Length: 164
Ligand SMILES: [Zn+2]
Image (cartoon, rainbow, N blue to C red; front, side, top):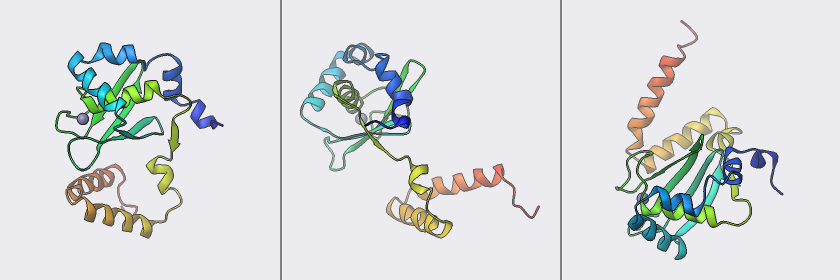
């Protein structure tokens, strides 16, 4: 049974309103990209399709060893999508991976599986465990160090230390 959270999600409302349909996807991308995405979708390249909060996440098997990561969300009646392949910069132009995921979602029957958001995952974890998690993440993805640095600085500017 879908949970209340599930039923009230923007995604389900969007799906109910016919925001994400095969015809709409076709209309929004060049025919060539649509055909490639369609082939990906039909060949079962979309490995995981799950919703976390208001964002649809999926992995797409492609030409490189590691699957491509696609995220899709909605803003009003617009569909926003991004992929970590070199073709796409930010929430911009759609690649065949994005099209494959959109088609997989549009063709999916029944509710799309729901996973916890990162906030929900981290909610029961204390500060030392959180530090270990971030340290491991940076160890695994070294380039994320600079992002963590930037985000810590942003948080510090937002909330001055209590002793001031
Ligand atoms: Zn892509």
